[in-house]
Length: 67
Image 1 (cartoon, one colour):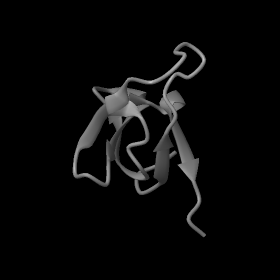
Image 2: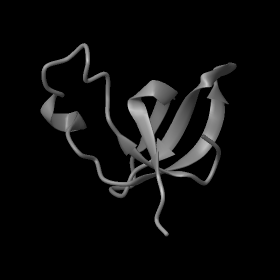
Image 3: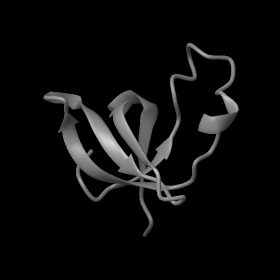
């Protein structure tokens, strides 16, 4: 996972039966920063609605290919 990758938010689906409404399908996001708060396992993601998800764990994101 690197800056510029397109990602989907998958959450911690193994721990939650369902995601809260505000987290359900934010669309395809773009990683804009890695190593948030000095932690290389976190990323900032720009979502289509203009919001930025900060400090998202890499396990909650799935890199997708737009080819």
